[in-house]
Image (cartoon, rainbow, N blue to C red; front, side, top):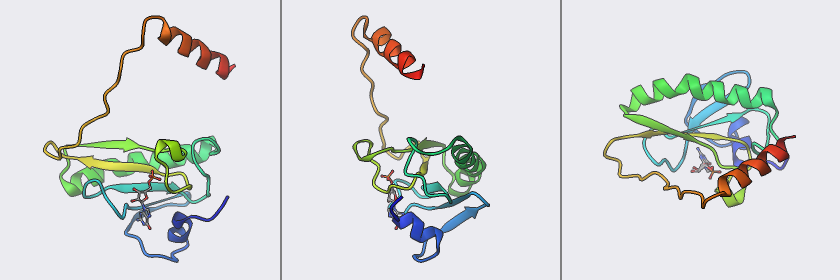
Length: 136
Ligand code: 5GP
C-alpha cells in the first residue's frame, strides 16, 4: 500500500496530538476537527479501508474506538458522539489508511444528520435480494 500522511504520524515523522496507543492501534486528534476532541483511530498495519482490512485488525480498531468514546466525551463535555468512517474517494475518504472518526457532539453545535428517502414500493426487497445473493 502507498505511504500516507497517517504512516508518517505512525512513524513520528510529522507531529500529531496522540491521545492513545496500544500494540495494534493509534489514536490522535484530527487536524481540522468538526468539534473539539474529534479523534481518528487507525490500525498500525496500513490497510487502505474496509475493503481490504482483515477481521482481527478491524476488531482492534473498533475496540480502541470503544475504549476512547467515554473519556473523550467526558474530557470535552460532549452530549453525544458520531462514529463514522469513509471508504474510497466517492464516500469522502481522503487519506487511504483505514481510520474511524470519533466526533463529539453538542446539543447546540448546529450540525444536521443526513436525511434518508423511503424506498419506492418493492425496491427494498430487490436491493435486499441482491445483497443476500452477493453474500453467498
Ligand atoms: P477522511 O476524509 O479520509 O475520512 O478523513 C481524513 C481526516 O484526516 C480529515 O478529517 C483530516 O482533517 C484529517 N487529516 C488530514 N491530514 C492530517 C494530518 O496531517 N494530521 C492530522 N492529525 N489529521 C489529518
